Image (cartoon, rainbow, N blue to C red; front, top):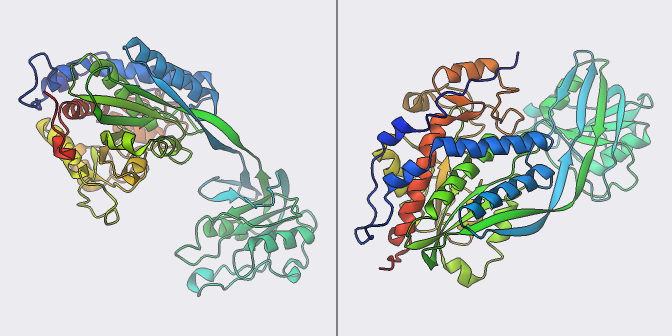
Length: 518
C-alpha cells in the first residue's frame, strides 16, 4: 500500500519557529522604514512556500511526472515563476539558451535465471561512439568471451577479452557477447563481437581500482557497428558472468538533440544597481520525477523571498535567478555568467545559492566558504566567501540551530560565479550521502540513511508515492513530512534565506568593502 503522509502543521505555518527568531540587526544607518529581519520572516510563511511547491507538483503531474529542462513541465514551471514575479511587481527576464538534450531509455536485464534489471546510469551506460550509436534491442544467451574475473587482484591490463576473433569461438549466432575492458579499444571489441554473430554486446570494466571498476564512456570510431552495445561496471558484468546459461536482454534507446530552455531573472525595484546581491536556485528537475525537494524547495523559498522583499526600501539591488538545465550539467548558470561583460560581473557583490533546502532526513549545511574542511582546491574559493558563511552561521546560531560545513567544490550553480571570482555561499540540506551518528545527535533522524532517500527519483514528490514506507514512517515519527519535504527544515530555511538576502541587501561591506549608500 502506498504511504500518503498526512499534512501536519502546514496551515499553521511557522508560528512556533517565528516566535523563536532572533533579530539580526540591520546596519545602524538604516532608515526607520526599512524592514527588519524579524518582520521579513513573518512575511515569508511556510504556508506560502508550500503553496508554491503544490503548484510545482501539479505542473509535474500534468506534464509526464517531471519538470526537466527540454520538456513541457519545465516550460510550465518557468511560466509559473514569471507569473508570480509579475504579480509582485517585477519585470522578469526570461533568458533563452540552447543545450544538448538527452533522454536515456536504455536497458540491461538478465531475463533467466534469477531475473535482474541493472540500473542505467549507475551499473551500465550505452555506448557513445563518434561514428554513431546503433539503437535496438536483442535477447539471447550470454557468451562470456575470455574474461578475467580475477582481475581485481592482478596488475593493470590483464584482460584482452574480445581483442581477437578466436575469443568468440563456439558462440552461437544471436548471442549477447560479454567482453572485458583491456588492451585493445572498445571499438575493436564490439566490432569483433558483431563479426562473430553477436546480436548485442556488453563491455564490462576490467576490475582494478581505482578507475577500472565503474562506468567509462565508450567513444571513438566504430564505423560499421549495427548492434546495440553498452558498458557495464565490473560488478554488473561479473554478476552476469556468474550465472551459467543466462538469457540477457540489451536495449539501446535514447533521444539526443538540441533544445531550448530558459533562465528566469528578476531585479528589485530599489537598491544600488552597481552593487548587486544575487540569489539563485535551479528550477529544473531530473527526468525521473517532479523534483520537489531537488530543487522545488530552493526555488519556492527563493520565490517567496523575492515576493516579499520587493516591497522594502533596500540599499543594494537584489537580482534573483531560477536556473535552467542544472541537472544537465549546471548549464543555465554557466550560460549566464560567461555572457556577462566584465563590467556587469564587477557589479555583482556576491551570489547566494539554494539547492535542496528541505531534505527529509536533513542537516543544515552551509557552503564552506573558508574551506575549513579542506574539500576545495587552494585558491578555488574567492575572497569574501568566508564572510558569507559567517552570516549564515550567525543566523542559525541566533535561532539556536546547529549547522555543518557543506562541501564547496562546484557541485551546484555557484560554480560559475566562483569561476568568475565572485564571492559565493549558500545552503544545502543533503542529498544521497548517509547521515552520520554525530549528525543524528545534532538534528535527529536516521543514521546511515541518505539525507534525501528519494534523491533524483520519482518519489521526490509531495504525495509520498513510491517512497520506502519503513524509512519514511521512521522519519515521520520525528519530523513533520509532506511527501519528500521536511516542513520543519523548510520553515527554518525559508526564514534563513530571507534573513541572509535582506542582510546583504542592506550591507555587503564585509564581503566586498562597498559601504551602503546613505
